[in-house]
Length: 621
Image (tube, rainbow, N blue to C red):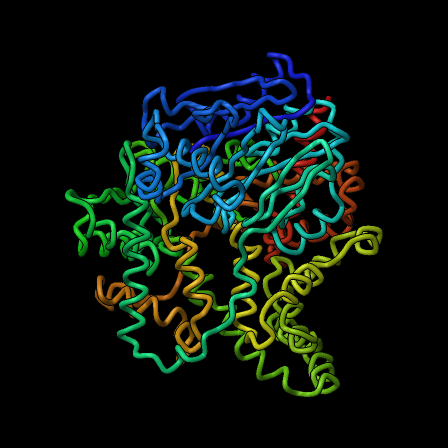
C-alpha cells in the first residue's frame, strides 16, 4: 500500500515535491521515491508489504527502460502471473509492481484483465511521452486527477493534488455539493473541486499530446441474472461460493509483514476470519473496538466468534466519547467532505490493529453483493406497491403527508416516485429533506441524485428487480465512494493496509448472476451467505440484528462538538459560497440543541461542508 502522485508539463520545485509527498506520507511512511522523466515527474511514498528490499522501491522502471511506474495497492495473484512469465522476463524483485510492468509491456491495456486486486497506478511511456493510469474494478483504491491545458496531475488524495498544482483553482463544484447533501458523499467522476475528477472504478486513462482519453474496462452493470440458478441445489451453490471465497482469502494472505483481521462478529467479518484460520498455521490476530455503552457495543459477539474460531483476539474498550480525540485526524485525513461518521470507529480499530500488524482483512462488500441491507427488502416490497396506478400512489402520498410520523411521510413520498432508481436515490439519501437546506440557485443549476442513479440504471438489464437495482447502484456508488473510501482513508491514516476478500471481482460477478431468491428469502437478508457462514460459525452466535459501527452524533453535537459546530455556523461567507440556506440550517441547529428534533444527520452533513470550506480558505491564505 502506498501513496502516488505525478505530473506532466508542470515545473515542480523541490519544495513543492516535498509538500506533495508530505500530503500522502501516512499512506507510505517507509520510503520516498521521486523520478523526473523529461516532461513527467513521478512520486511515491512506500508502505512496505511485499518484498521489503530496495529492489521493490518505486518509481520502478521496466527491464527495457521504457516504462516507469508508481503503484498503490496489491495484485493478489501476482505470484501465479509471475510464474507464467518466468521464462521470458528477468525479474529483479519479488514484488507485484514488477509483474504489473511485465504484463503491461506484453499486453498493454489488456493487462488489466489479468489482475485480481486493488490498485491505482500510473505508467509513463518514456518513448512516446504518454501516461497510462488505471483504477481497480470495484474502486477500493482512490485516484484523483486534473487536466488544465497541456498540464496534467494525479494523486492518491486531493490534498496532494492541490499541493502538486499550487495555482489550481479551488473552486468548489456546485454539483458535488448537491450530491454530497443528498448522498453523503461525492460520487465519481466528480470531486469536491470543480477542476478535479476522480477516475471511476473499472476505468483507465491515457494521456497523450492529443489529450486525455477515458475507457471503461470492467463493470458489473450489464451482468444478467441467471434465472436457471433459481432451481439449483442449495448445497451446490454453497460449494461454489465456498470455493470462491476460500480462494480469495488465500490470495490475500500473501504478505512479508504481519497481518490480521477486523472482527465485528457479523457474518462477513466472521467468514473472513474463518477462512483465514483455515489457511494459517498459527492463530489469526483479530481486532475489535468495544464500547462501554451497550447501544454501540458489538464486542461480545466478536469475542464469541474469536473464541469459536480460536483467533488471537484483541479488544480495546473505549467510552464512545473517546472517539472525539480522533476529530483532528478526521478533518485532516478525510480531505474531501465525508459524511459517514462511522469513520471514527474505523479509525479507532485501525489504530488498534496497527500496533500489532501492518495488514488487516475486512468483510466489506458482502452486503452489496449478497443482499445484506434492509433497503433491499424495502425495495422488494416497493416493487409490489409500484404496480398500483401512479395517480393512486400520488393520492396515498398526499394522505401520508398529513401524518405526524416522519417515516409515514417518507413512505408516502417513495411510493409516489416513478421508477426504481429515483425511488432508491430517495431511500439512500442521508437527508430526506435536503432541498430545504439548499438555496434555490443551487437546486436550479444542478442535477439531483435521482438523475445520476437513473442514468446509471439505464445500463442495467431490463428485467432487473427493484432490490437488485439497489444492489447494483450501491456497487456503483455507495460502496466505492462512501464505504471503501471510509476504510481506505481511515486505515491509511494509521499506515495500515486494509484488504477486502469479498470484493474479488470473481465473487462479485458470481453474485450478480444469482437470482434474488438466494439473497432475500422469507424475510431473511443475505440468505445464501448466511447459510455458508453456518458451516463455520454456530447459528446462535451469528443470528442477531445487524448493528454496524455507530457513534452518538446527536449527543456529540449537543456536547463535545457543540462549540466546533457553533463556530462554523457563524460563517456567512461559507454558507453563501456553498449556496446553503443559512437561516434554515441555523433554525435546525437551535431546534436540535433544545432537543425538539433529532437533526444530527442533516447538521453533521452541513458542518462537514463548512469545515471543508474553512480549511480551503485557510490553506489559500
